[in-house]
Length: 55
Image (cartoon, rainbow, N blue to C red; front, side, top):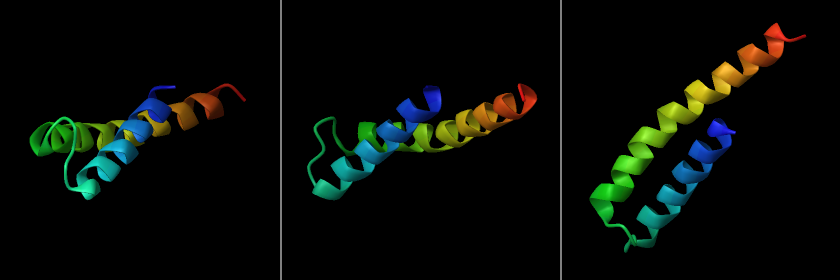
């Protein structure tokens, strides 16, 4: 679930930044993007490892 939420946050941040006028401002949206991208990857990797361990 955390992987999905962070992926949604990353995609939303990319769309907000590409629109030219993000609702939360460029800095805040950039910070959200910078945090959500690596967290999404880590959470996805953890989910895959958990699934493999439970097989």
